[in-house]
Length: 107
Image 1: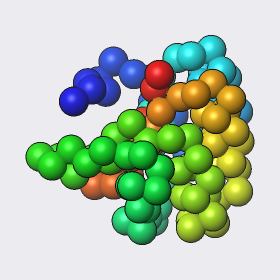
Image 2: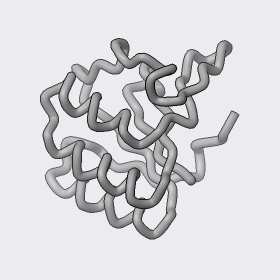
Image 3: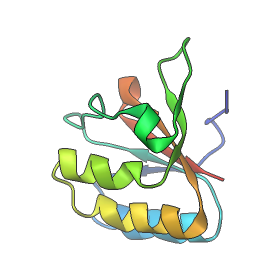
């Protein structure tokens, strides 16, 4: 399982978070998005986005970037599509840590 401790963290409540995340992702640099408390990723079908479930932590990891578009729709966060597009363009992968309300984008 990947270690997230040394990755930069962006708070989604910052208005510039989507653009900052996009810049990081397009430079092929990892980033952690700390999502709002009401963010819900429970409805994501991991198989649909090629995710693997880490049984010990419950984290869906190595998901395709399209998963962010689904999460944007489910959570009514259209600006998350900016990040999704960057992930798709850069072929980045996404880990979903539902328990801690985090989205981790990496190579």
